[in-house]
Image (cartoon, rainbow, N blue to C red):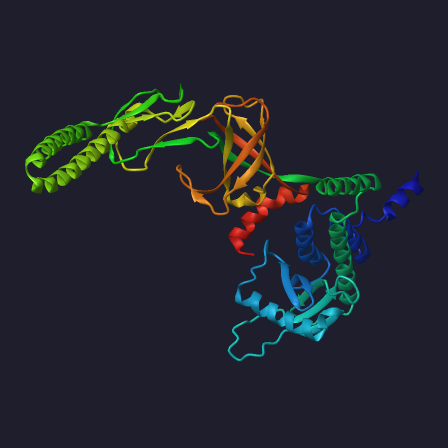
Length: 450
């Protein structure tokens, strides 16, 4: 028992916990760097955590590509203020050293200004640069000291640069990690399949407003200047040859016919009187010839007035449909000689009139396939073939410019004249990929002029 007490009395008290060694600190910093959540956290650790073992003023994270140098992080700041006078001065100094090759390996120098008017007064003028790897041109850590660093710090700073450089490079490489073989095969297979699908030839198509119109209709027009008195048929009515269609105002022509009849009667009386005088007087035979000429002239005027009066009623030259918009729009309207009043068309002879957009005029080739979907029957399309197209665009009634084209029906029931819908025009064949990028490519060229 006494011996135990003696042992206890000589046992020294519990010693204070010793300060971690350099190796332990490096291992701890390496573990923290590997566990960093992102590159920003890694940079923040690199410029702050090494100060636990190094008595330095500032640590800078330097990123470079050749002579292009960037300062991405600095001790004690969340973000490096690059546009401050100190930031610009330090960046210019590092660019100069990068061009000279100083930043390619481990190097030491003192910050000195080459300008007398430079107001930069930086207290930590002794710099030690530790690249991320030997002969690395990707960047490194820059340590700034107020006094020349201890020689024992040099291998520690070199190791710190390598630690953070390797972790940073590993993180960047992880973003560009290759896909697994299975996923890579699926990816390349999908790309190859899309490329093959893009090479499938399909016809270049375009949509155009379409209307069913009559093929070669007869245009009924006025034969002299006048006013439409009355329309004798309803719009789109079936008429036969000889039916009266339009009644022009005949008041003036009827009065002219009455006057012409009176003049003819007067000339007939003069002719009889000249004939009676010719029996008793030989000189009166000359008056007889003049009276005969006047009678013929009066008769010609009467016949001309009667002919014009007969033309006030316009009749159908053939069977068909009388195509015009509305009776009220034509009644009372003045017309001039040769002006069209209505059209007479055969219901069984129709064409499709298309208004193709300007951007897709290349599809308007003779013989191109056309499919029209009527607004009244969008399920059953009409098959047609393009017969002719204009080379010059014209202004449409609703505004805008378009190419006029006509197509003849090849299949399907004959639609009603005046029916409207949308026609799909099939042009020459081209790869599917070109069909998909045609419109975006057109827009880009219109916007950029390339």
